[in-house]
Length: 142
Image 1 (cartoon, rainbow, N blue to C red):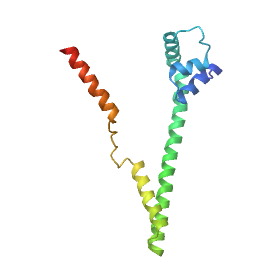
Image 2 (spheres, rainbow, N blue to C red; image 1 turned 45 degrees about the horizontal axis):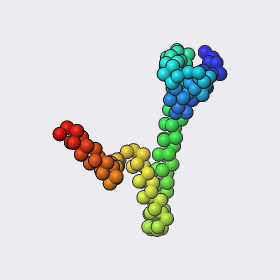
Image 3 (spheres, helix red, strand yellow; image 1 turned 180 degrees about the vertical axis):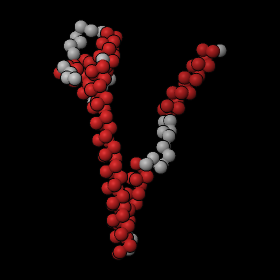
Image 4 (tube, rainbow, N blue to C red; image 1 turned 60 degrees about the vertical axis):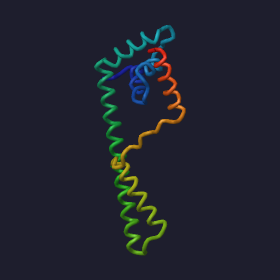
């Protein structure tokens, strides 16, 4: 199944992270169209069987590349950790080999999501705005 150049550009736009609307606008002339019309056209295009097959095919390739990259990263970090460990055992703990070992362990733990995610604390400005809104809501409800 071969797509037209515009259809292929639409699929490539989606894969690059564009919304359906933006991918459609970059692929087709939309100068006289409302955003709501573009949304409908883009949705219909994405629902097209040929488009969907091409999208799924390329997405599958992308996922495989991402998995390989993750696997390779893990393998390289394990290799570095083992080399640093062997160096520590051979010549003792030095700043360079201990840093390499600890950094490799830290990166491996982050890749495996072993650290709990830090929750972003509200800034003082966000707290002040929230307090002001609560005050306004209280006044309106009174």
